[in-house]
Image (cartoon, rainbow, N blue to C red; front, side):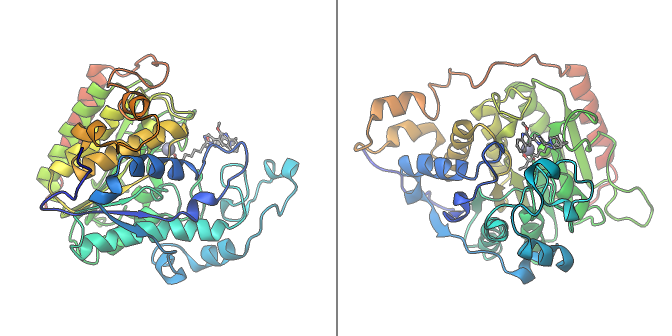
Length: 393
Ligand code: TV7
Ligand code: CA
Ligand code: ZN
């Protein structure tokens, strides 16, 4: 058998930091940084490292983080220590400074290092793209889309995506940001509300009263005003429980296809949050690894510099499957992956049959009732088409 080799004609770079993966949010917290270790093990087991340029990313500097975040916030983040308030009081504490220290965004050992390493990987990936050393750059440790300029939110403290896109914008006139995490990409949307150089589009479960963060309605397209060049450059695709691969692909291909045609981005940043998969501990959708990956495949076909971020994902074995499959798509070996399992792999036959593509038949999760009607999906396409009439690249 021949191992995986570098794809001809383009380069994929892979950015990770083993130190980042050792941090803990707390025993019961759904965010498990070790899912990154699990994903990487699966990726390396397939020999995919031989097809990519592999980098151990560095921590982002204070100055780099300050390109987006306020220095007040960064200074506080750099000095806070775990457990400033007793465990039983913290949930009732009404005025957490910068929203730090509650149950969603707890203070833990090495918090600042964890955040700066996540952003460091994303920045390294962005720099590989702008220097033309890579065509696709992968930073599974990034994708923390809820963090605001001066506030932590939804397990996110530093918005590595915004920091990386700001780097892309030094060389690229227009960047398209796409977010397939099951949650609304509110932090990234807000950061670029007032520019027409970044178009943000998030697909997410939307239920303003019962699902975090509650924003991202169909007609939330940025602050509307004559003077705001960024209006119509924030798009949202609010979905209901149980959406399937077929429906999602139809929406994704139609909407992203139209955007690429109208907005003419010169680079794409794709947040690949794996909590949109079926069986996710926090998610609500019925997406399979193939359906999730189809979004990556579609973006790759646009033939533009592509930055892939991680994000959510709370059933670690499924996160690893999705990100390994998407790494294989980036490298272009997705269809032959099972032939490449190195011969020395223990339990090779079991590995072949039930790890990555459980013969493409095994389904993730208990299927949920699909509450997305074709009529509603068509309305969403219609609304996006109308927004795009205002967009001229
Ligand atoms: C990108 N959902 C992040 C997604 C962030 C979601 C939330 C939890 C949660 C937190 C826990 C925990 C949890 C089982 C789930 C209104 C609240 C309700 C905390 C219990 N178990 C991403 C953020 C979301 C923390 N937050 O997009 C410690 O679920 O809904 C909320 C807010 C207040 C706080 N409580 C939940 O995927 C990376 N949190 C167990 C222990
Ligand atoms: Ca999303
Ligand atoms: Zn999420």
